[in-house]
Image (tube, rainbow, N blue to C red):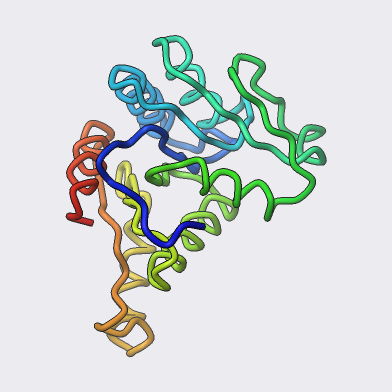
Length: 193
């Protein structure tokens, strides 16, 4: 991963999200709203390649609004998750690690919509790499209906206990509404991460 990325333009956003819809209709709606906003600005989607769940919702929203979709999925997952065949580019990998590396390299910003353990792991990895100064790309946690708030509370606890040191801060933004995601990313590109 590059040490410093230019924030002058956001060409692609990596979106981490669930392959399920979750128990709240606002989650899928957020994926649709974000996908439409990305396509309207000519920003491409880099994501996990599935056609199901929130993953499918955002991919279809980007594609149906004239945007570019890049799906990245390990071959073994194609047996479990239906691959989105509307993507202009589909990259099959051998491992999850290769998938995450490609997604990160092809993206200028990261968004975590609601999801499960995989979404959490991808988000935390990008936060860790930012902490270690391996990238300076914007990270937005889309805490739709307060989804990520328990994680933010855990980060506060880690900070209070001295495990997140002040000299090595976590750099992320939080959007509680889908409409706030793009402004946070576009504002962060100027270095306001």
